[in-house]
Image (cartoon, rainbow, N blue to C red; front, side, top):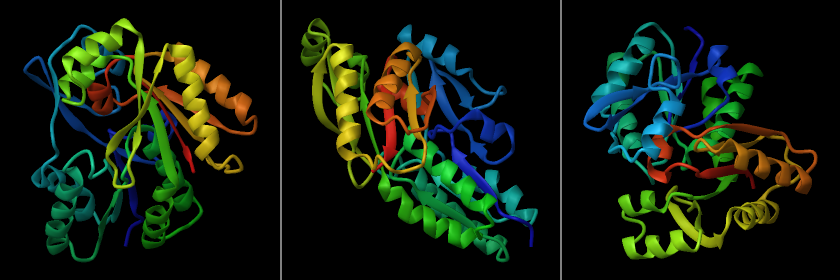
Length: 287
């Protein structure tokens, strides 16, 4: 039997080097932008992230789509047919139906390829949290951990992950039905930044609001210092929706609070950025 392979969908954010080195494969997802279907692959052959955020800022009509069981079967079937088992990190079931689709596909593929496995993890998270989980998955495999042991270890570790974020573009929350238009108008006038985090079952919840970017960044750092394991050696992830200046400012403040932490900064996945809007900032860490 061949070695197992690692996968993560592009709603998660991991540093590009791991993809370039072949440590993990990214499962593409599709957008509808102004009525035109486009794939985000996390590589050069899909939509460029910076160009995507230009379209977001220009108020393009952007919709995300779900991955169906048939798409999963077609995508993973070729790896299983070649004798590889796969371990796949999937977008939270609290945000999408993709996990259910992946489980259906895995069941169908098992009937076709009984000698290999497709194991899917409901990350209960997205974007920056999944980056930490992905690095853990890669490190486990590099250390010689078996497919099943890696799967079980990640199923425990995922509950140790947390994230906090702010939304800069209130219109994105209006389009997603999470904020009334009148409230958004007042919020923009007062420079209010809604603060969000994850629930235990992988959904998003509001945990506060703050006025102005400097106080908002301070609020994220306070969330981090209150809930993070400051002795943990796993990296922190900061993902930004084309707002690198604020991401670096947040990183500097986090570093002041915990000088020993290792911080990764990268652009936020368009899959999540389509819903949070331009300017959003996400900080993920181990609790």
